[in-house]
Image 1 (tube, rainbow, N blue to C red):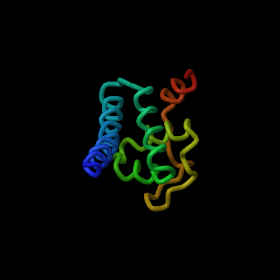
Image 2 (image 1 turned 60 degrees about the vertical axis):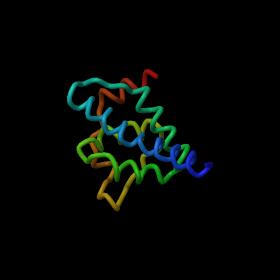
Image 3 (image 1 turned 135 degrees about the vertical axis):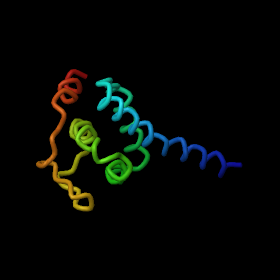
Image 4 (image 1 turned 90 degrees about the vertical axis):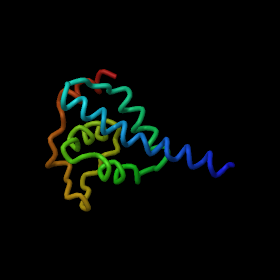
Length: 106
């Protein structure tokens, strides 16, 4: 019984990646930003998976949304200078200036 509960909790936690994908798509398509919800999901993922959450996020989030993701991770102090497995360098990324302005107001 305990294994079933743990598995259900893990599945619920992994759904956070799907939720983030939807939230980034809404921002890209409709300019509807739910920054508090995105931050909550990211913080929970980092609490669960530690530094490996960064690799998991870039693996699960579509490359077209990586700039949005990187903007939030820079704000949280979780974006590394480089992720060679994805060919990502922070210096080459274009952070979303609007998102950064909104995050600075928090």
